[in-house]
Image 1 (spheres, rainbow, N blue to C red):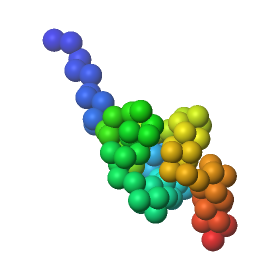
Image 2: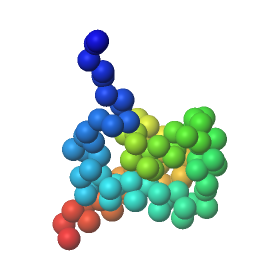
Image 3: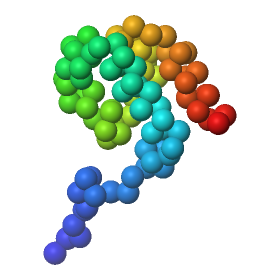
Image 4: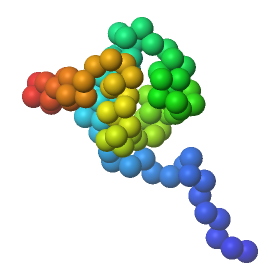
Length: 93
């Protein structure tokens, strides 16, 4: 009988996903989206992505590429630098 390969759902969480800095980054993305008055569905439409894309990023199930991050910031009407500044301030605290 062949060895069973574990389901991706049960694999170890990568370190970047569980870091406090990454959680702060995602919290900043969520807060910025909500401050812009956008739902996940609204943001997804602006990004031309399914709502599940936004949900997975916000649930820390999916990582954003740099270009996706820039598009995300543009879609909610803020500069990428402003989000990174928030992260930087939290890191200094």
